[in-house]
Image (cartoon, rainbow, N blue to C red):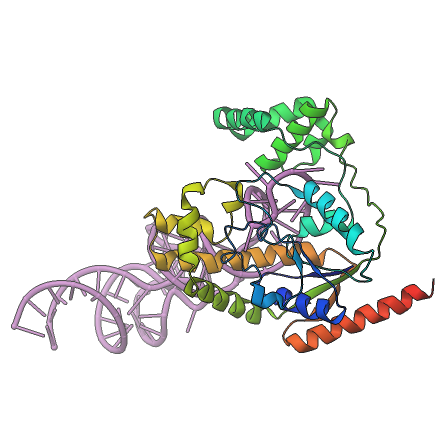
Length: 305
RNA sequence: GGUACCAUAGCUCAGUAGGUAGAGCAAUGGACUGAAAAUCCAUGUGUCCCUGGUUCGAUCCCGGGUGGUACCA
């Protein structure tokens, strides 16, 4: 499996199609927002024209009303890969959601999915007693995890508490971070661009997306703005405009800023992964040639064993 | 042309009884196992507009200049 990762607006979509074309195979998206069919414009999901006839999986396959999470994604992708590897030697996975990429490449521990009723209780606790309420709750249930969590991060605190309650065992004993073995070999590619160029591309793409009707798309999902799928860069800002809190100009400026920050977080995540082979994303043709070379070298390497 | 006010970090601004300065945002670095495009942590040297003067010492007080804003002609 060839994994193509990189920050938003770095040209992953086009590169993945080029590579999939060359190997006559299909593309799996690892983008936690392109799943949702109601929001293709604002998530820069590939259009059918951009796909150039290459089958894409996990793009527009869900509704914003669906419940979904990384472990289900891991399962779904593995099931699909098992089928696809029967006839394809190579598969391409492309996306910018680091956690989702890792779930497929390295696996994720066996832990329960969140229970909606419990989440409600946790929210109630947080609203009534603030972060301190969550802290003391977690300290009681799992003192070991309490020592290592981000003590200010309410989501981590909540998840820790949730797992302890649902399983009756400390979270810290179940979050093992073991790496699972996969029945296929993985080659990871990272697309990199000089900072100024990436920033320029982010800005231009935001303007292009707005020109192509993004605001109308945001308006159409506005009534559901509290759904998690819409807690997303771009939509949050457009919703602030649609609510009358911000001018459109301000919203656009914030979209650009927040997209830049998102790209930075993606890079932080990816840089940590020593298995990534970095390639220059400035020239699309060159990038796809580099990927193909890397894949061929990888195959030859495999043949030795 | 006159009068008043303003000029401090990339931006918006605070401040110093005269002892060379700090917030928010941005930016940068980082964390990350079922909300992940989420969530969270860390990091503040900048000719305090220029130039004379007073002073042991001026970003701060005084004079002049330059630029900006408002009002009056």
